[in-house]
Image 1: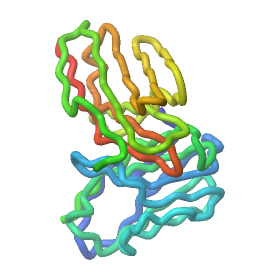
Image 2: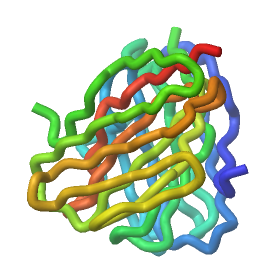
Image 3: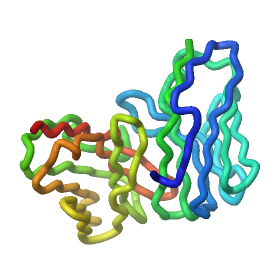
Image 4: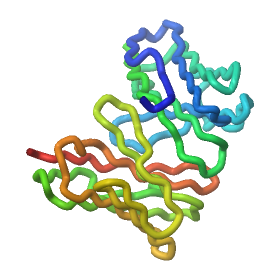
Length: 113
Length: 106
């Protein structure tokens, strides 16, 4: 148990669907992150929230839309995705945006058909 | 070129062997992290270090700031150590290596 919970674990969606990924942490952390992990590539940072405010958007296409209603919850809303968006999406949290260790969830394996 | 390079990319070892995974980085950092990712996908932080050496059980991590290099050692390796090990550094942002896939054979 890492303290960061992601749902669902697996998701298959068509290119016209709308779905959402959910992340929840009860570690009292102030920073939350969405990462994309594709095969044979380094983890790619997508979004960062610090104290519920989005502080980074790493040139992510608008078909990915994050939402952070409070410091414990983070969502990634998906719509009109492409097959190349199929990947493992990982949520992480840290005490602050600085050098604190990251705590990762187990990820959502997304397949876009 | 990636800011963080790991070697080897893949590693197979017999149970009981001593294992070393290397990480080199090219940016200024405030800390280096070693992460472990099991086949299920979840990532666990093993170490965060900014100098010297840390030990946790059979795992040892070292860093040489001048040479911009870190190593992760596993002593008396076990099949349950089979995972992907990822090196990450914190500068003005996190940079990640592509990972080393370790398989320990009984």
